[in-house]
Image (cartoon, rainbow, N blue to C red; front, side, top):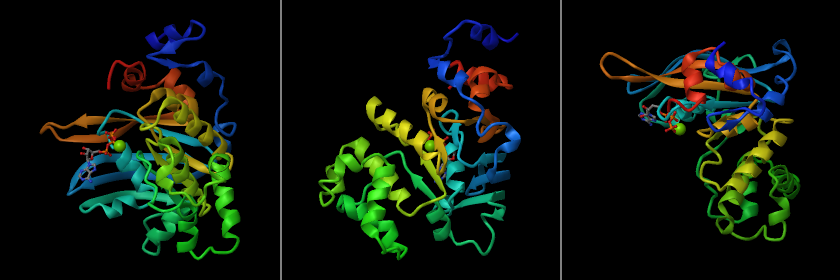
Amino acid sequence: MTEIETRLEAPSVKIGDVSLEHVAERPRPSGSPELREPIFQVRDVTVSYSGNPALSDVSLDIYRNCVTAFIGPSGCGKSTFIRCFNHMNALIPGATIDGTIMYHDQDLYGPEVDAVEVRKRIGMVFQKPNPFPKTIYDNIAFGPRVLGLNDNLSERVERALQQAALWDEVKDRLKASALSLSGGQQQRLCIARCLAVEPDVILMDEPASALDPIATTRIEDLMHELKQEYTIVVVTHNMQQAARVADMTAFFSVNQGAEGQRTGILVEYDATQKIFTQPADKRTEDYVTGRFG
Ligand SMILES: Nc1ncnc2c1ncn2[C@@H]1O[C@H](COP(=O)(O)OP(=O)(O)OP(=O)(O)O)[C@@H](O)[C@H]1O
Ligand SMILES: [Mg+2]
């Protein structure tokens, strides 16, 4: 029996400072693994900046209506990887991607694929809320207007704000500047802005790391709600957060080459419960128990 298993014998066990009660209770995502439907199939993906690989040889599937978390130490390539799913790396000079990412059985990087269309289907929320200096209404209406979705715009705005659990707080001040909202409200506004174009997938890169615990809880509750309709991929530094919100968790780490070059690798990917209670790899165990990183 590994040390981690021994420690798990006790009821209400904690690994590092991650309480596992809620993790242990959670059923595997969407029933048995065979029933899960892959929405992305990543195969042998390497991302390089100016020819230097930052993340090497990653293969995994992202499943529909699941929350998938990427965890791992700083610099292991989590942001680099999540940016691959909506062509955001294309905006970074010198960034190149090798390997394949299939999205609904279509090559996401095929020659006929339009990056703007991809970003409409696969929205992204960043660490720092970035509302436009416009009214609350105009922030949410921005994407639909760009895409020419002008019919029933007010209903669309309301629906997005409802889905992002912000409507009740802003319904009487839709003409106020979005910059007058609190940080947590601004982040929900950014989520609503993303939802207003009815995406298929929402990518979130540390969406709650700039927020206080209450605002963080609201974002986590929201992820739970939204996965009924959407597929969510989230980068987080916060292991309790991964344990609380994610169905699947991917642990990344950094390999140091002989000449000191550092390359991110995927160490282990599995149901969150498995990653936090019975990881297959010692490096994962060290990380989730707080002995590394
Ligand atoms: N725009 C860029 N140009 C060049 N190198 C980059 C760029 N972005 C990231 N890198 C490098 O790629 C590696 C992975 O960085 P990345 O930001 O993906 O890590 P991360 O896991 O998200 O880290 P953190 O937890 O600190 O956010 C790092 O070595 C970083 O310096
Ligand atoms: Mg990052």
